[in-house]
Length: 151
Image 1 (cartoon, rainbow, N blue to C red):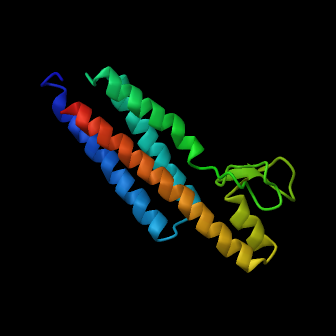
Image 2 (tube, rainbow, N blue to C red):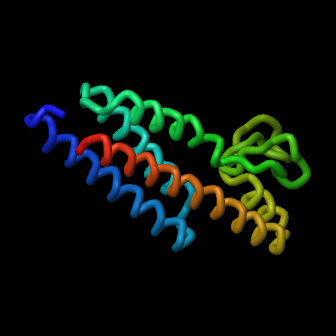
């Protein structure tokens, strides 16, 4: 890596690590999903910026990180899908069951709450927390790979 780029790369990696730690804390504290998604978006953008600035990462490391980023969206899905709609796998957003194609955030949780189905809402919260935890771990792995490549 070029010595003049190293401080900038390390600063960006620290920024990414801070966001990932924040995401983990937000998941643990059951924070509002939109806030968590904003944080994951910030991490993705930071990773894109780090990559676009021509950092001298090894090609193999960059390939590994790219694979992790592709997997990132998949981490937000489950094989079981949504209650009453197993064909919709995404746990963060999907068309509403009662509203047609308008997107709903955290549909399993939101729709259960709207229908006053509290046990189903609790189960949905556990599932959503799990996929967000998986997402945070994947982002941490990507940040670690970038950190290793930057050294």
